[in-house]
Image (tube, rainbow, N blue to C red; front, side):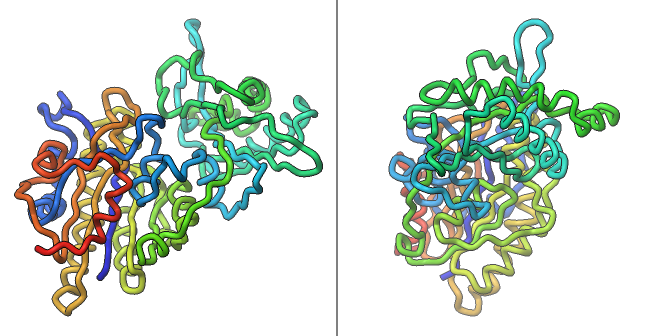
Length: 416
C-alpha cells in the first residue's frame, strides 16, 4: 500500500463576498479533489485543542498523528530540528521573525511580518548586526545566539553551558506576528517568565537594524525594511516517538517550510528538498508534484505540504487563495493520483489523505481553530456521497473531535 498525504495549509475559510458568498474551496475549480471526495470518506475535524493557540506548529503536529497535548513544547524547537540543531535538556529555541513595525502616531502596528519578504542573504547580514547588538547591550545575557534560517524565518537559541541559566519559563506566552498583520501590537508582547528579556531585545533591535546597509539598500529600491526582530514560539526540546513505531510505515516530507521539516525530522521521516519550493504563493507546484511521484516509487508514505493558501489568507486575498488551490489540484494532486491509479492497475493499492491544518480566514488574516474538511480515499475506502471537496460538502460525513486521530484513520483496514 502506498499513501499520499496533502496538507493545503490554511485552505479552510468562510464564505467570501468577493467570491459570490462561497468559500475559496467552494469557488475554486479543483476537479481532482472533488473526484476524490466523491469516491472517498469525507468529514470535518479540528487540529487545535482549546488550550492552544491556532498555529501551524500545533495543527500540523496533530495532522501528522501526534497529539499536541502530549508532544508539543513550542514552535521554535521544531524549526531547530529542521536545521539539524540538537537542543540540550536546559536549552531553549525562540522563533525570530524579521518584521516591519510602523507607528503613525496612534501606536505601533505590525505592518509586515515578513519585512517585505526579505531575502535570506539580507537576513544573515542583519542578524550578524543583531548578534553584535545583543552582546553590547545585554552583556549579562550569555548563551544567546541568533541563527539565520530562510528569508524572515530565523531563530534565537539559548545554550545552557558554562554555568549560563535561561531566564525563560514554561509559563512564557508569545504572539505570532502573522496573527497581528495590520493590527496594533501594544498587547502582543511576551508574557510570563522571561518575557522582560525578550521584550527588551525586541525593543533594542530597532537601533541595531535602523541604519544597517541592507535596510538602506532596500529603501533605495522602494522595498520594505526590517525594523525589528520579533520573538515568539519559544520552547524546549520535544520527545517524539517515531512515526514508523506508531503506524508501521516510513514517511517522506516535501515542503518549503522549516516547521514541517522539523516535524518530519522528529517523526523520523526524510525530507525531499525541491528547487523552487518557496513556502509562498510563487512556489513551484509542478516540481512538488513530480517530486512526490518520484518519492512514491520508494517511500511508503509521501506528504506534500503547501504553504501558499495560508499566505494568501494572511494577505486577505481570497482570489490568491483560489488560485493556489487550483494550482495544487492541477499540478500536484492530478499527476500524483494519475500515477497512483496507474500503479493500482498493476496491483499496488493506495490511499490518499487531504486535510488543511487550520482555517486562515481572509477576513481576519489570522489562523483560527475550528473544523476543517478532510478526505480519505483509495483502496478499501467507502464513499459517503459528497459531491465536492469543501467545508459544506464535508459536513455530510463524520466529525472527528480529535484531529490527531485522523492519521490513524488513514491506515484503518476499511472495506469498500
